Amino acid sequence: MTAAERTESTSSEGRIATTLETIDSQRAALYAVLLGLIAFYLSPLWGGLTTAFKTQTGFVQTTPLAPPTPEWFTLEPWELAFATMQGGLVNSLLFVVPATILSALFGSLAAYGLTKLSWRGQIGILVLFLAGVFLPYQSVLVPLRQFWSAVDLAGLLAFAPFLANRADLIELTVTHTAYGIPICTILFRSYYKTLDDEMIEAAKIDGASAFGIYKRIVLPLSMPMFAVTLIYQFTQVWNDLLFALVLVTSRSNYVVTQSLNELQGSMAQEYNIQMAGAFIAALPTILIYVVFGRQFAKGITGAS
Amino acid sequence: MGFDIRRLLDRIRRGRTDGSGDGERTLRTDGGTTSSRGSKVSRLRHSDAVQALPFWLPPALLVGLFVYGAVSWNLLISLTDWSGLVQPDYTSLSLEMYRQMPDDPSFIAAFRNTVVLLVAFTVVSLAIGLVLAILIDQNIRFENTFRTIYLLPMALSFVVTAIFWSWMYNPSTGTINVFLSTIGLDFLTMDWIGNPTTRLAAIIFALTWQFSGYAMVVYLAGLRAIPDAHYEAAKVDGASSLRMYRRVIVPQLSASTTSAAVVLMVFALKAFDFIFVMFGDTPGRSADILAVMMFRVAFSRTEWAYGAAVATVLFLMALSVVAPYLYMQYKRGDL
Image 1: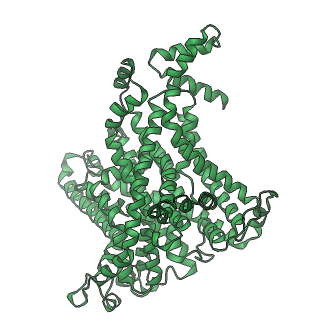
Image 2: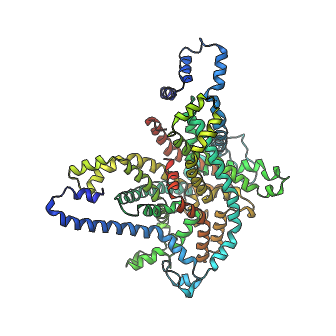
Image 3: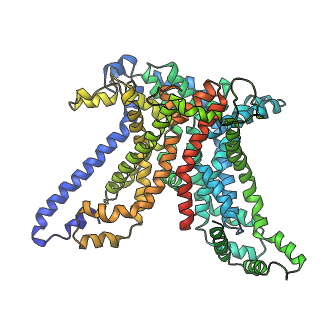
């Protein structure tokens, strides 16, 4: 029942005709507001999309909201932006996918150890994980730089030149995995708390080991939560710029957010190329969001 | 505090349904004196605590090293006078870096802006999120589509949204000014992000666009958890819709407000990427925040110790937001 209807049903019979009219106009106003809000929320994306298809003269002479006319239509910004950013896209994929999977897996294992097996003191460990979710990354940047320059991953991997050249990306993988574990643990824990204990208890009585229970019962049941966690974590890691700024030193290892930032700096006046670049960088997360919107919403609200 | 932990442990132990739980409790109450040594060892090996270890310990070690190790190391660095390309000297530690802060006008400005951003962004996002949630909760058609679109900006990177909004705020052809002229508000058009007086407000506006959908999702979950009977009761009392929401519904959303506010504040403390892409690491006094200042001081000017000190202040700010929240949750037994 809607608020309008709730109010309506209290009014007397004689006024039904007039109230129906007010309901209609109220409903119309409601939808008008909702649509106006949609226009607001989409306007930056729409303005960017139209601009990305316009030539330089095109976007200077028209408003950003006007769709491109045939006279000014061009695909060149997309080609240029893609050419500059393709290295970044590949590098991002190379480190985001393993970092996402690893942190989800570690999160699941930790959450299992902290819920389905009961032992003293787990609340203390849990609080340590929880606080990690809210950490501002600035407060670890200087030590991170010190740590990774002391470790000298490139030197350690000198025997495998392919890996040594990608040392920056491996550092990013490890770093993002570590900082992703807290939120993944919290997400999995909230899910495991709702799992039925009966099967686990039965398996325990049958003499199954803790690992056997995890592999045969908990892991298969975790798949919906893996979807939520992987989507959340992929979006977070893909979108991050700060860690890459600090850890990626060689240009050949620039990740997508870095190459987009550079594109923006070097083409300050070419808004069409900037917009095309922004869409190229955002495309994977937008696609995932459109397809898995429900899981995404679950992921972002899981922490609270 | 100690009492609470003991009570909590009791609760955890009572929650166990298997036989070994009771066994362990008897074991504890008699101090373990009556059990034989052998059974104790085998019980220990088969106890959940030992079995749980391989699951949580490796991730806990990673988190311990990267989160707590790094935060402590950062604190240590902030007590040195390390700068430049040499290695830090940990032998003489002092609070010198923290003593400099009150006399550093750029720190004062960044601190003030951080607080303004934190409060304004959080309050505005919550308000807009609440309105969105109430509108969406009116049994509307295409609810999913509306919700999906309002939340969409949150899936985007700060790098992407900063580029979009630089274009939105473009003084000559940007959408904002074009829109203002179209509806006859020409006198309001200005260089929103170029002008120092409006710069911070423009940033807050853009960030609100990006994150109000988050507040909406949290509030929507809160609204859906309120039993229908409460709406009915308010209706019987003859309350108008507006009054019903103000008096009956909104007060029941305080838990949603708290948790959304905490997360939004932490987002605000992390707003680095957005400002960095828009302005580089020198956004000027009017829009500098601690997160950006820390990066500039440490990584551009290589004043590592001072940067670490600024980072510690940022960490303490986050802690002062999060610690009471976590403690409250713990008290309520929600952890």
